Length: 289
Image (cartoon, rainbow, N blue to C red; front, side, top):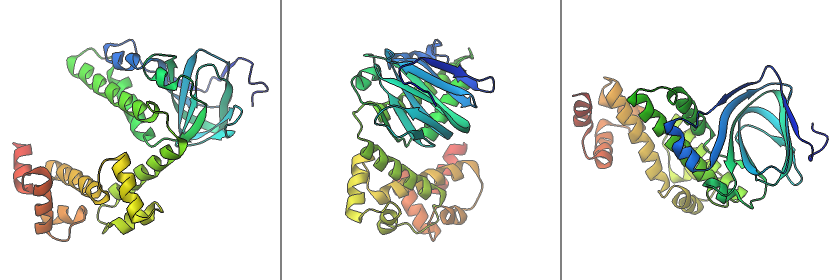
């Protein structure tokens, strides 16, 4: 670990692999407007250590896998999967790898521009971030498309950049209380669990039990963070999966109904029409025509 927070350190071993987002490409404009001047995905191995004595830009790191250490007064000494590390401009700090490998997503923001304005004057923080898997997917997509020159690739790169901007803004635009971020992370994990097991007979009581909240408080949290009632979110996840299955498979409606948590075809068809405005058979025909 770094011996002094005030010393500059820049040790990147030969086994480290880093990919930088091509922000100079046209699709990178939306990220540059947010104040991002450097960003990338890094797969790190020992040795790796960075020390910065009061630089003039903000640094935000997301840990995908592995573990790192952070040397900064007032912060926990380690960061792990799901953690977001916020290091505002003017802060002296050190960080590095604390395991055999460490995969991070990272962004440098200009102080006072875009999201850099939201970070100005913030205190350093480590807290859970709910959007890391989606942020990583958007960054991978941007890397894959941004250097191509055909119109479809440029459009795809722009869409990936918009997603990156959305996920960054969600985490950074407000002065986030780590406790609020932790609640959001728990709720997102709940919806991920529901999406993996749509057959389960979900109820508000079952959902509340998963996140160790009362049913009344779950209603409040869902309204605050997702602007939806708990069972409405379950229905949304079921219907999105049903639409995918109707588009991409020839499975009978009875089987699709069972897969997404409905005991019979009639109940599924009624719910599907209420959600989409058309019955499942018409939806399938229209999407395949």
